Image (cartoon, rainbow, N blue to C red; front, side):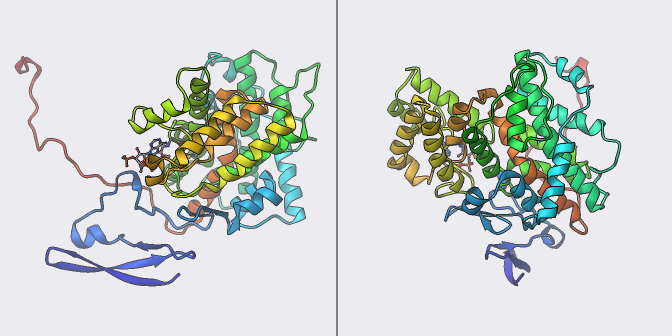
Length: 431
Ligand code: ACO
């Protein structure tokens, strides 16, 4: 990693700050000594200019629309890999050998069940409880049933870590399916160890004790693609949350449960639900696509599924999903008017100066909801599916941070703008 220096002048003081350059040429001014040497801190609300870590997991070039996991372009992975292989790549840094893949698959199959006591936990929730709230709570619950310290940040045993990663990836899918069954008052369906990851999820979601769900290849492939495309996205809001929580040496499960809560928000993973609701509102005749875009431009509403902090070009995941949505809907013979509305909104937005000038393009959430709807995933489960997909990324980032020598607890500073020292006023004197 090459380094050069930047010079900062504050009043009559000058200091040299090292410049760190990443493997793709991104340069960062290292300000670790700034406060000690100048008494100043940096101010960067929403962290738009702040690199909080060095990471070898995911590379994004937002101007060119590149996304790579461990150096491999997302397009190649989408075409040739599968979700579990990609998860392994992200977490362990290389594509698995046959033996590694077989071992990891074996762990996923063995770890798919959840403790019977979970049923009582599920029953404690009202049937209309938000699935993301249940998911986060249940990931922490799963950690309570762990009798080994595999998720402990101080455990560096690679076998134990692989077991922890497999457990979390496997159980989160069972928890998600059970959540859906509970909200619908349907019997829980046990995981089938013979089924691969995505097929097993669909089985637990949609089988009945007397009528096993027939997993259609198109549906399985479409969902697997969505999970793969969501598997990591470097230091976004939820991943930074996982790292922030993990920096306090919270265990893997607790850190990822926090990630679920961050992902839930409508500006982040929750946008896939908002997109569907927006398209539905337009479809039901509340407004036309043109009228909706007018409201967007007047800043009354957001065009959900558009815009990104990093991509100032097409989100490569959205490109892949747009193609996939055409194919899946055609194969399943689904005619969804919402897809036509989405296409119309995209067409209008891409030539409108409001969006062009601000470099706003469709993001991954714009088409994922349409595909999930077409394959029968209930809308309130969309963000849960995002969380299942993102789990390998969170695990990889938690591990990378844990393995870093000399890691410190994350602790941003602030610029205090409240009142100066003020004396306490007793109640009787307050009027
Ligand atoms: N609709 C309308 N205007 C938008 C949108 C949008 N979707 N996104 C950004 N803008 C506008 C902003 O209002 C701002 O306008 P201004 O210059 O007049 O003030 C300008 O574009 C620049 O946007 P930023 O504020 O810099 O965008 P930021 O990086 O803070 O936010 C975000 C990114 C949250 C994704 C934003 O684009 C957004 O709210 N999008 C809609 C929600 C969404 O789809 N989220 C999913 C993101 S992908 C993911 O998390 C998986």
